[in-house]
Image 1 (cartoon, rainbow, N blue to C red):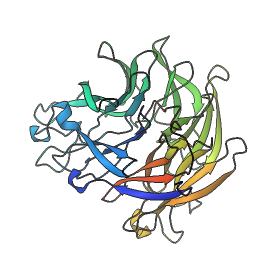
Image 2 (image 1 turned 45 degrees about the vertical axis):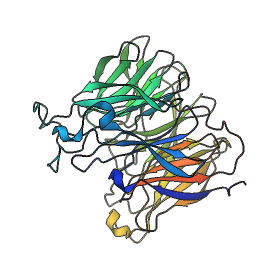
Image 3 (image 1 turned 30 degrees about the vertical axis):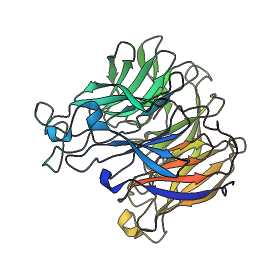
Length: 410
């Protein structure tokens, strides 16, 4: 029986996981949906890798991250609390890589500062852990603490080179990791405001941004970072600070990348990396609703993310919406804020709202990532009040390989 198109359903995590956020959601090489139940604000808890079982319409708790890495919350160190934009699938070998991030306080404490605890051997974060999950055999193949003392903000895979790219936190360095040699290489500092995504072009060059939205490119042939003369768009009253990349997805043919920014009144962009020496960037306009722009707005309220292509070839993304009567804080919404799922015809750029992602018990405006499963259904990770989880949007399409091509960055 075919499901209705654009029917949305919310799936909260198991309360036993103590999850307070969900930053990562990805299609695995097996066409199934993987996500992360994170406990980033609670002392002494671990993230858990969760998979959606479409056949039985339920969630499977797969991997306790801390146990897999051998870095238990009882250690007294900052915890392996979350996977932050750091799932990447490998089609070649069926592995889903997952990297951890920091922020969870040590057991018995209420706050963790990586700077204040940098030289504290008892409390300091051990480092970003890397987990190689075998989707064919449902097992952890191997793990590594691959970024000492820092978290992994985002992750990207170059299958051809057998290399991962990552951005570290808090030092905001661009690093690469050789999967065969298990060796990390530091390529330099980007700034202070971490970009939330790294993407690849068809030549295998990796892109991210600096503090003011300036595109930065890493060319593996030259083995160096270079700042490009291209700056991401922002509103006229903004300086560009914090207008870094938030989300990015390649067009199905791989020729261009659609991207959004991480700043109030985020913009949608289309980048053509092969055009000219540096590529060509198009500003497709702001994504969220009109408002009184003389007032400051929180990026947690005024937000867009979850970029994903549907099996119909349209681009989908989630943009926050809230009652016009409010001023500028999430508390003013009284639970009425939601995420509008927007479809865009990339040929005409025509856009329309197709469904609202809403909760009956809390606001639901912040969507971190989107993905598409083998059946062609869309999924969107939700960050907000507990119980957190994700939304499934049924698309009513046929087939069992609609997840291709895979997105190889978190």
